[in-house]
Amino acid sequence: MNENSNSPVVSHAEALAQSRAGGKKVHFVSLGCPKNLVDGEIMLGQLLKDGYSVTDNAEEADTVVVNTCGFIDEAKKESVSKILEMTELKRAGSVNKVVVAGCLTQRYKDELVEGLPEADLFIGSGEFQNIAKILKNHEAGDTNKRFFNLPTYLQEEETPRVNSQPGYRAYLKISEGCLKRCAFCAIPKIRGNLQSRRLPAIVNEAKLLVAGGVRELNIISHDFTDFGWDLRRKNPEAIENPAELLRALSDIKGLDWVRVLYLYPDGISDEVIELIKTRENLVKYFDMPLQHINNRVLKSMNRHMTREEIVDRLTKIRAEIPEAVIRTQFIVGFPGETEEEFQELLAFVKEQRFDRVGCFMYSPEDNTPGGKMPNQIDEETKQRRHDELMAVQMEISREKHEAFIGKVVPVLVEGLSEETELLLQGRMSQQAPDIDGVVLINDGQAEIGEIVHVRITESMDYDLIGEIVEPT
Figure 1 (cartoon, rainbow, N blue to C red):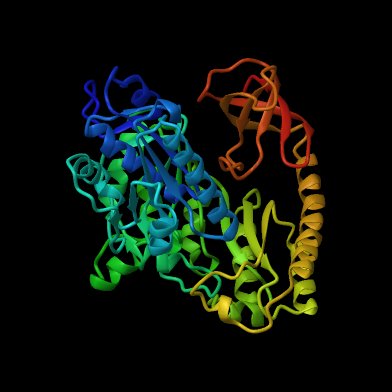
Figure 2: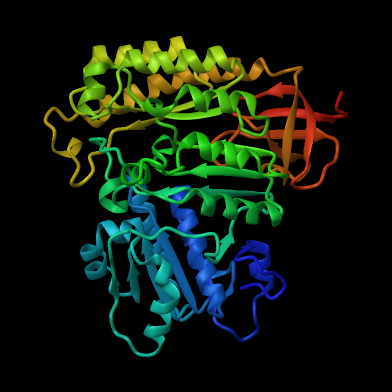
């Protein structure tokens, strides 16, 4: 994998540096969520081990892999557009082979194979780990284009992987599939039932990442709070559970930030709250997709929690960790949602004053209970409700950002600003990569990956501005 290291994990920069003149080159496009991204990183690792080189330029590649997302309509359209873009390069002679992988492939296998004859191979989420073998057989004359299976693969710490994130951070996937059966979601049909990784394998992979320079780990799964449920069901003495995982990860030397994403509120135990409160490197950040607050709508969504139980968890978190950042998501326009129920949700957002809110207009998904429900809401009403909710949240976010002015906060420096090379850009621990805002630094110098102290001097709707200061 890496001639200078026994580690199966290499950075994207290392992978590019290993490019071989005249060798097979692969260009990778990964779409969708971080969980899909990690699958892509494993595919890249397998191909690198098999003798491929990585290129960031599609037109230099012999093979292009499009790792698709099939979650919602917008993601599906983006995936199809990117596939067509890559097959156009093939038609122009710039690329020899186009491979379509990921969730969209798994979900719409027959339609994609029939509708995209220009693509050479279709690899579902149950076969992605075999991509090197599949490509080798294809080059040897195998004419099979379809590779689909149940998604049962779980990586081990020795699994080859190319960390596509900047060298100081990485995603760590702890499980596959989902135990929940929310009425609006197709993930269990695409990814299957919950399968948790063994705790030692997760911890060993985390140690390998830290040894390679990673300071920030973002823990991902379809529901962190269900971690280990399947293993404990088979063996009541199994050690895998959310609290043990947090405890083990926080003990790793050199790991500055451990952030957990996707915590469903019904599984946030007092023990988990206590660990996040007391362990310094466990980021005080709760990413809780609530989806709604009206009890009838929650039941219709097949969300096994009531308004009263949600408020209890929010109250507990804020009482124990007043500085905690709470991020959530809501769906407006779910079938049957009345105006009164939406107004209840709007009032709840005003009352709770969340730090971060994402809002989705309900989109009927194939083969989900929600898509078959009566009383579907018209698009105009969905859009109005979305806009109203986000307008309320924008004002809350603006006020919360203004409260940072004058405070000194630790910031992880990520490099030059995407807006202008005159500013540095970084993130507080309260800002998750790619989904939250950033801190722009207009005074002071620091190296990429360094954590510095920044005094916040200005605030914007999503971002903050500040200057580097000496720690006190």
